[in-house]
Each structure stands twice: as structure tokens, then as C-alpha cells.
Length: 260
Image (cartoon, rainbow, N blue to C red; front, side):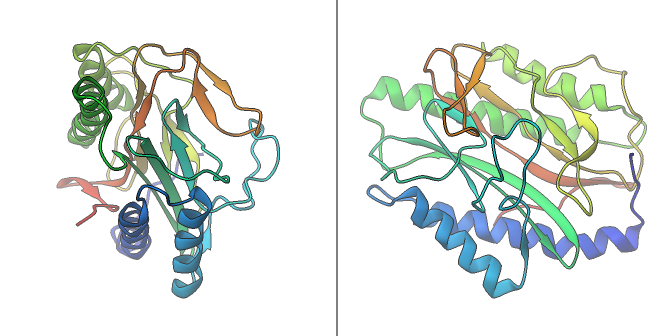
């Protein structure tokens, strides 16, 4: 069911957005060469406890997950792009890390993700490829947000994202994409990263959604890691993921998870 939020409810959602942004900022700052993915999860876990927030991930067990997730952030490294289950792995120089985080504050949820390179890339070629991939997801996110205006449709967001990806030479997987956000992390409508402009659910003031372009370097095919959660590229190429939770208002899109 698609729900529209009142201006008052959108104001009540702002603290969750700020908290999610703060956690991503802190986890990114902690993600240095030699730091273990479990240490990053512990940083986020401590911030959740201190804030009195609730994790959206730790007990999350959808049909595509092998078991409850059990951690509070997703850490996807290199050829992993989504749902990366934190495990005993020390970050290496040049790793491409995507961090995805969602939490509930006072009963309202926000969801956001960021990708970056840890340390420095091994070669100029690798650095250029990583930079292009990450920047393309960020530009696609900006394009999707810009299209999220009253009077438009979900397909306009999808088409804007796809235009950026295709111009950069990336293909698109539509198995996972953006989604409604509110009292729970995942709701309607689904917001795919490819679609036809002018199609789909009408965008109205009060709609709150997460927009999340994610692309792989040389494929659009993925498989699930033996851990039962982490999604990896079928050909071993790297992936990147950018995401914000936004509210559609009469004045245009409001980014609730904007990071300073």
C-alpha cells in the first residue's frame, strides 16, 4: 500500500534522516586500511544504542535472505554491490566499499548509501574506473531526485537514472531498486533504476521514497554469496551504490538523508 505523509509527518521524519546521515559519515571516516568490517558495524551499532534508535537490518529476514541479517549496516566490497553482510575482513588499500544503512528514530525510518575507495587505488587505470563508477551512481542519484516532482511519475525517476547509466556505458539490473519509506524500511512503490518516462505511479506531495542507483562495471548480472545475503557481480567486476531518502513536497524533492 502506498501512503502519503502530511507536512507534519515529514517534519517528524527529519531526525531519522539526520541520524542515518550522521552514521554514514562516521562509518566512512572510520573505514581505513586495516579496519575490519565488523569494526565498522560496531561503530554503527554503538551510535544506534547511544541515540536510542532501532536497527532496520538486524532482524530483517525477507524471502531473498537466507536468515535474519544479524548486523546493522551493509558493507559491500569490490565485486559486492548490495546487502553485503559484515564479516571478518580487514579493508585493503584500493578496496571499493559501499555502505548502506537504515534506522528507525521515533518510529520513522530513513535509508541511505554511499560508495568510496579506501586508501588509494593501485593503478591510475583502476582509480579512473572506480571514480567513474562511483560518480555515475552519484550523478544518477541527483538526476533521479531532480525528477521526483509533483505531477511526474515513478517512471520519470527511473528514466532519469537510466539515462545517466547508459551514457556512461553501464547496463542496469532491475531486480533491486528504490522503494517507499515510512514506518518500515521497504514499502511501495518500487522505484526501478530503469523505466519509461511518464509511466508508473503518479508522484504526489507526501510520498517518501528511497532512490538508489547501483551499477556494476561490466555486467548487470548478480549472484548471492554463500553467506546468503551479499550480492556480487557475475563476472567479478566492481559495483557502486548511492542512495538517499527523499520526500516529495509542493516545492520539489526534500532530501532527508543529506550528508554534510
